Length: 267
Image 1 (cartoon, rainbow, N blue to C red):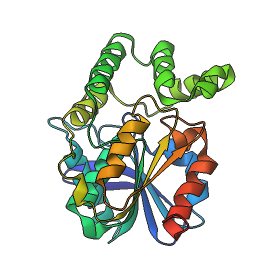
Image 2 (image 1 turned 135 degrees about the vertical axis):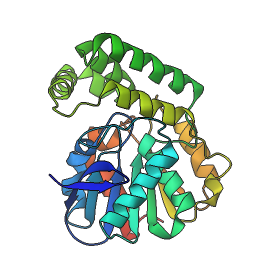
Image 3 (image 1 turned 60 degrees about the vertical axis):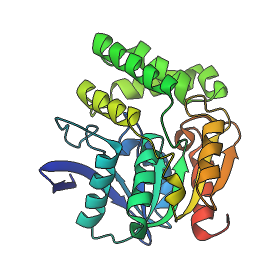
């Protein structure tokens, strides 16, 4: 099992393919497994790195404070461990928060930047929602109703209307062997609540693609537009028929959009 250890913390990672490095950063509660649907699309073109953020998956759960900036420092140290000087960075949702901090604080380490379903700050509504979802997790554990609640926020109406998709998603999620511990989830939602780059996001120098699902109700298209308006020269692409987890709903469309941007077809 590939493990990177630094600052006394162990981080799980996987690498696929060769070429220019592409690092994928997961969102709240998700780990490296959430990217497996797109890894096969990226790995013929890029050295694709996926990993588990601290407090989820097979990485360590750490006591004490966890902030988005701390997780961005973890990511830099992972790149150092893998001897990767510079990489394309792709972040989803909370992973997009981490990616913003990387691009602001370590511009020399970021080649191109892709921000999926993310914003320059977490809304008050979402902070309250995540706290309530955490409280449900404490009461029920990883119950069927807990996962069903998540599907309503993560996926588009047409996917939710497909009962076989929802049932399969919930069944596979409930039997996943590396489900996040409740304290890890709590730590990440506290990090999200304190995140804010609204007065700094204009410092991002990397060529940036912002990908947003037109049906995303968790982090809305309007929030993505605000992000795009404040990152100089960034490109916003709204994708039809998708919601918050574009890379899961339509992995081929997502990977094609990202690859076209990275090879220069989208400018």
